[in-house]
Length: 165
Image (cartoon, rainbow, N blue to C red; front, side, top):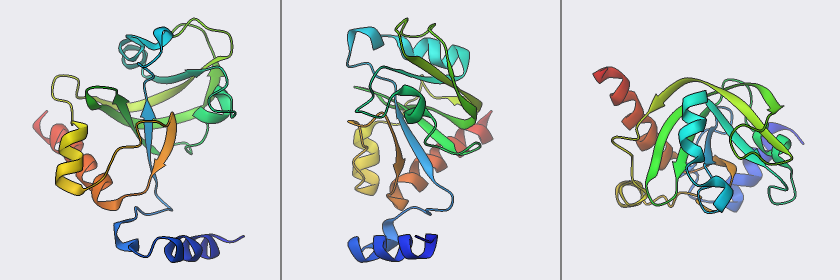
């Protein structure tokens, strides 16, 4: 199936296509996995090491495959449950096996470059929803973000942070 056919079928399925992010230049959502005991506080080490990390089954996809969904250079936003979007960067290279974040079998990491840390001023789930109508996909581990207004708002907030620095 060609990209055009995929985009056309997507627009038919979602008639409000003006709110859909550009499929050729996707933005990605990464959940830092604070909801499980093994994940508590893991986001700190991920940001310190400039990686995203996952372990285990990952909804039937496995950690390596899950982390390799974004293409090299794609932007990614870190989500922390109960807080919101806490960081952004661009994924680099492919996932590699490691055990320094969760300390679990089947753990993989993927490098993130151009990391912007917003832990001191997170972009809350509530703000994103109220400003854009977008509900962050908090139940996902790694997924593409489709709501154009939501993505643009989040990206603009991070861009403003880099201009202040």
